[in-house]
Length: 441
Image (cartoon, rainbow, N blue to C red):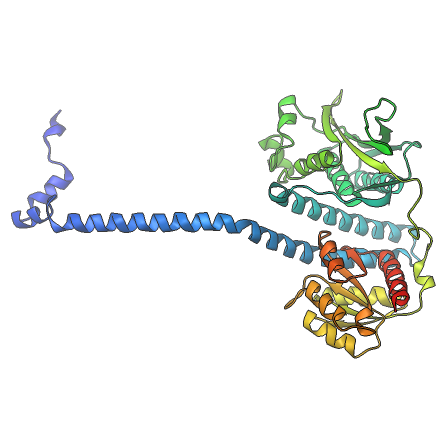
């Protein structure tokens, strides 16, 4: 080819360069040393970056934990306020339409709290495992509450709804009601989101005992089936549903949004509670998600848990010191405590708590765990170090993370509340904590 005999671009440039300078650019000249030094510098920079990256990987878990702790605290503080004010509004003289509005606000805030719990659990699970709590709760109340949530969401979207709760369902059980509610809300959210017409349904019933599928004395299996007449799923899509950050297909992600995080967490929860989750296509279109869990039977409520329908009616007005740095949290707590008949005073730093207690006049301390400066744990320890009578004051720890309870009680807290905190729960804890403190003095 004629073009093969033409000099290349680099040859044409060299043709106009004096021979002396051309020799300087040869393989034996100084520029080669410069190139070698540059390569060595690049290699050293690469090694430094790799070492920094490796060091960063070892530090990530601690960073993630800190970020998640901040996330839980910052999100649940306003949610506590929304739920608390909603509870207060629900006790007011409202007409039917206004009461529905209040119920909608509560349902939305509870769902946000549930999603926050699922997110935190999913992000931490690869490092610290998935732990579930063992709390006493009313299973029938939880089931009916979830049913109301499904009916409300269906109505808002113009869908039909059906809720069937077996009369054989045990009333009182021990398990993790917060995460169980979060998992069910996730399934309900998906059912209504992916259904454009038709309806959604919830069926709750005990299962496994008669067939010996649930092992262990006092155990009961419970099945929650959430069905919809929505877009449906193929078998291939079903296999991908429970992978973290994965949805059935790109079409679903584009049309309906979402990160696909929830179902992975739901499956993880089900297995942690001795059960599992299964999904089956429905004849005629739609899908059924069946969540099973194993709970411990509780024949009666624990002492004192149901003795006070209105605990605020049985406790005198208290003077409360609240250690809370969030301005919104202060407003909400002041409102709730005032409605309960108490008087609140606030400080924003843990360092100020012990000194304020020393000035006297308080019946109890509400101690937030996440504070600027020293944290709630250290602040509790400093109060307890005061000695009687000031150091014996009733202290209630408050946090958006349930795992803070062990540390709070270890530092000397008499009780612990997880955000979002309801007025009723706050009234009960104040009653019991002040009784306990009075008995110890």
